[in-house]
Length: 94
Image 1 (tube, rainbow, N blue to C red):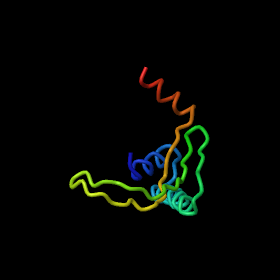
Image 2 (tube, rainbow, N blue to C red):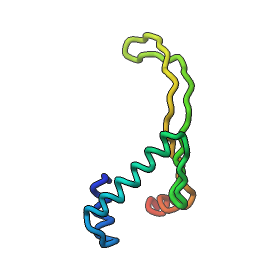
Image 3 (cartoon, one colour):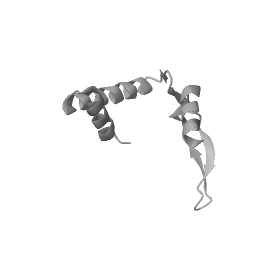
């Protein structure tokens, strides 16, 4: 699913214009980006939690050349699915 698909879904289900639906989707993602940049987590009840995690520097190896190198410290976003969504997904597989 793409941002355009989300805009179309809001347009069809809520009845907003496509421009308004697009503005909502863009605002949502912009707010999420700012929150992650500040290092905060986002919890969406019934869906899951996005965490910003700090990874320390570590030694790594280039798999192509075998050369050792240092991987720089960085921040990554992880997602943990809620039990409610997990249950919905498992129903589909059954």
